Image (tube, rainbow, N blue to C red; front, side, top):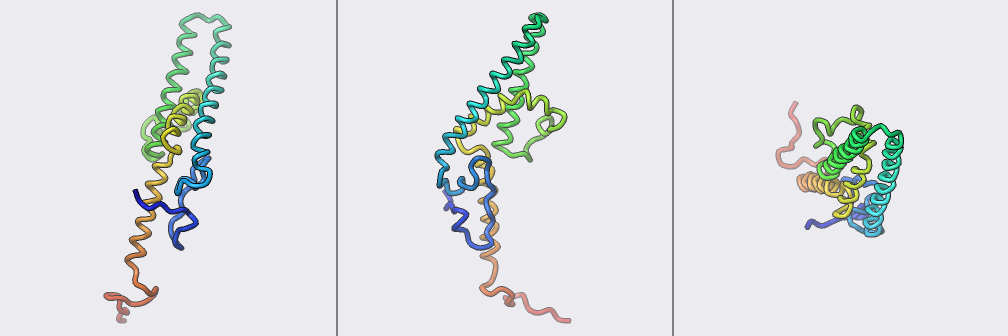
Length: 175
């Protein structure tokens, strides 16, 4: 594994790590309260998913009280299940591959906003499952950060010892 740096031990001018929601920049060196947050975030996501499922259950039972028939009730339950599945797939792809990887229907924020709201339970469950492995989005942030650090180190290695000095091939221009 590469040497991990904390933001406080970086050389001057080095790229800064992007914070992750709920974790800040503690994911870089996995220091501080990172481990505690790694436990609390999945628990919080699971509790939020349970609360969301309870609210959806109340909504479905409210429709069932109207006694519209078994077909309509089955259609409603199927619609909630499909919305949850689609939202879970989208959230999983967001957390593993990033927003740039979203194409087609997954990239639609406005036109499918209702689907993402109804499928919030599925999205929270995907967040919970991803949080069991790592801080959600950590792999993406770590890859981008390590790439930026490598580019920074290559730029620093390519420079001469004195800024503004004329190295080989850097003579003054003739006029």
